Length: 201
Image 1: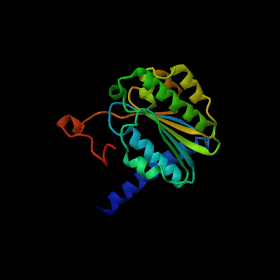
Image 2: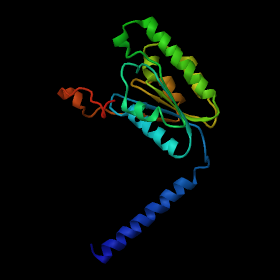
Image 3: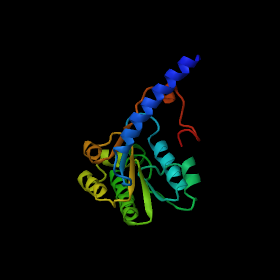
């Protein structure tokens, strides 16, 4: 790289920094509890939520996790996070709905998980709450959508809630502060690779 190239790069980055600094300076809210939704057909929705759990713990936050529909196996993240100080972990599902094949049991499990979630929302020590696969419970109408959305909208100002699962309902997307849709570009499952410990769970 020549001196002229280096100077052009420096000037370009200086302009970029000025734009970036102005953008950041225009934001006036310094702290706000958020409603975050991780949805879409791609892999990584729960994985991203648990990454956020680790980040929050690193800042000394107390964290709650409620898993809807994931009772069939013990995941790696559960093994690590459940025993950490500051984590209140609750796996309250009985497995996916196509495994139980019993709607009444699925509804009862979802209602129990939602009751636990609401108790954690009311706990002033909890700063981050992950509602893993809540979207699935809403998709199959195991919980009343309107009531769940209203309760999430009425959360404490300092509480961030992360909802995961495919097929997020439009009403939840509308209420959310941040929505990320994981796209399914390519997945090894289509090539015959089963779910693997350490990768999928």
